[in-house]
Amino acid sequence: MTSKNVLTLLAGLLVMVLPAEAFAMHIMEGFLPPGWSIAWWAVALPFQIAGLLAIKKTVNNRPKLKLLLAMAGAFVFVLSALKLPSVTGSCSHPTGVGLGAILFGPMVMSVLGSIVLLFQALLMAHGGLTTLGANAVSMAVVGPIVTYAVYKLIKQFSGNTSVAAFLGAALGNLMTYITTSLQLALAFPAENGGVMASALKFMSIFALTQIPLAVVEGLLTVLILNALLTYSKPELQELNFEMAEG
Amino acid sequence: MMKSKNIITPLLLIAMVIGITIFPLLFNKNAEFGGADGKAKEMVTEVQPEYEPWFEPLWEPPSGEIESMLFSLQAAIGAGIIGYGLGYLKGRNKPKDHTHA
Image (cartoon, rainbow over all chains, first blue to last red; front, side):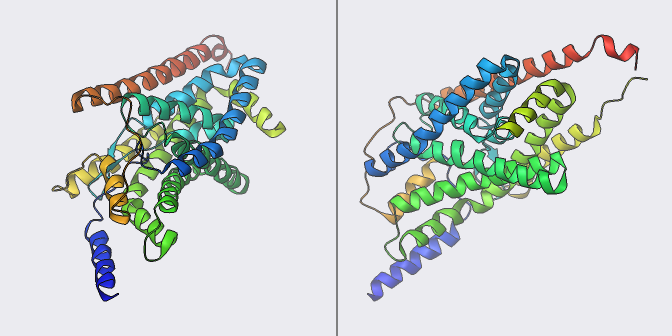
C-alpha cells in the first residue's frame, strides 16, 4: 500500500521532471491492443466512406474544383512532413487538414488525411497499419470536424475569415493531439486513477509542445487561404454555394 | 489602375512562422529536439510495463538518411502541387480584365 503510493509519487515526479519530452501524434504500429485497433478502425471507416462519396460527388459534379481538392491534399502532405522544434525541446508536426476542412467540409479530409497516414505508415514506419484507424480518427476525423465547426462559428459571429480560419485550424490541431491522448489512455488506463489519470499524463507530456505548433498550423492555413481568396474566387464561390446547400 | 496586391500580410505570416520555429532553437539551446516517436512507447511501458506490441511495421527505413529523404519527398510532392496550383490560378487571372479597370 505505502510502497505503491511511493511508486505513484515517483511516477508523478518523473512526469513533472520530463516535460521536455513529447510524442509524435501518430500512435506507433502495434501500440494499441487488437481490440482497440479494430474498434478505432470501425469508427474511422464510416467517415472514410462518406468522404470517398463526397469526393466522388465533387469530382463528378464540379470538375473545376479538382485542382483545389488536390491542393488541399498537398497541404496535408507538406505540413505533416514538417517536424518542427517546440519550446519544450522536442519536435512534433502540424497536420494540415484544416485548410481542406474549411474549403470542402470535414468528410473529404477523412480520406485525404488517411492517405497521408497510409503513406507515412508504409514508407516511414511512422504510425502504423493496425493503428491507422485510431490515427485517422484523431487527425482525419476529429481534427477536421473541430476545425470546420470552429471556423463556421467564428465566421458567423465575427465575419472575419482569417480569424475564423486561424482559430479553426489551431484548435483542430490541438484537438487531434488531445484525441490521441484519450485513445492511449483508454487502452492504457493508469493503475491508480484509471483512464482520467492516464489521459492527463499523456496530455501533460505534449500540451505545451503542441501549442506553438497549433499556432503555426493556424498561420500557414491563413496564408494559403488568403492566396486562394485572391486567385481562386470563382472556385471559392462555387464551394460556398455548395457548402450553403449541403 | 492596377489593384495593388496585399504583400504585407503574407510576409508577416511567414515571418511569424519562422519566428515561432527558431525561437525554441535560441531559447532552449540544450534541448535534444529528438524524434518524439519513442516517447509514446516509453509512456505506455511506464503505465503498463507488461505490454508487448503485437504488430511490427512491415518495412522500416534502414537509416535516418533514408527516412529524412522520404519526409523530404513527401513535402516536395505537396509543395510541387501547391506551387503548380497557385501558379495556374494566378496565370489564369492575368490577361484581359485590367485594361478596363
